Length: 324
Image 1: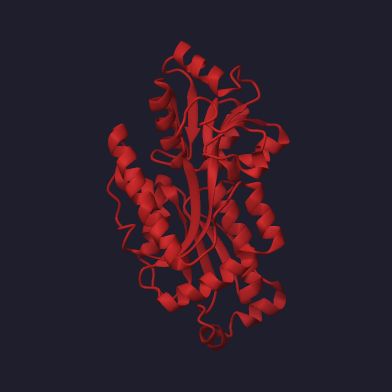
Image 2: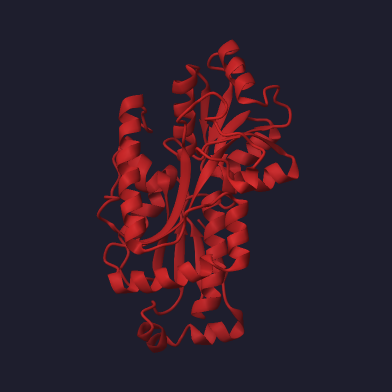
């Protein structure tokens, strides 16, 4: 378990003790923890830290980003679902923990009932990436490579049942190919192995992959929303590469335990919407391809519900199996 604490200067430490003032504003007293279900360095972790730093400045209190990696984010989600509703513990909600993994295996929480939505942070494409040494650097060539080497080309993911895993399953079905799925405990360690050549390809989150693509250590082959995002205007979509209708996104949002008062969630929603309009935050979101974020608590709740239905159908139709 790893933590990073953001404090808005020395005055913030004193201000964090002013619980009556914070409560009067509809905010939690004392430090706030944002629980991330993946290892440091992945897309979920990166965006949690960007927002956590700004909230520490705005709320004049500590905001602690705490990594509880494993089981495709469900360890973190289960933990947050059982915390008090005082607003001191939030979840960086993720497509894996809220929409995919509960359709693959039994989890100890109900993603539809055990959380109070706060705000959608963003929806990002995945990037189909490889390391510099791979011979196939277009979708067409990759399909040919997989067909010539059935069951031998390796694709990494952030874990069994992760968004990256489901994107790979979608690709294998659409292209009628077989590949090796190699699960990790988050994008960070997976990217280390991809760059080092231990694995060959991945449908990783744009947020996590972007620094490595920009450095030239990873090569972007395609993106997985229907339209190209401005940050990757020169990278074709999977739909443009011969797979019409192919869309596999990763999304992030903030949620609290279901016991959190709706009024507190709405108060937090107002502040996080303000954070997401800050020029430097907008720049970070755009660089990682995150779009369509912000809006009301209800918007995020409806979005999660629709995603749960969508991925449950894909899992059933594709016969995808989870761990165990």
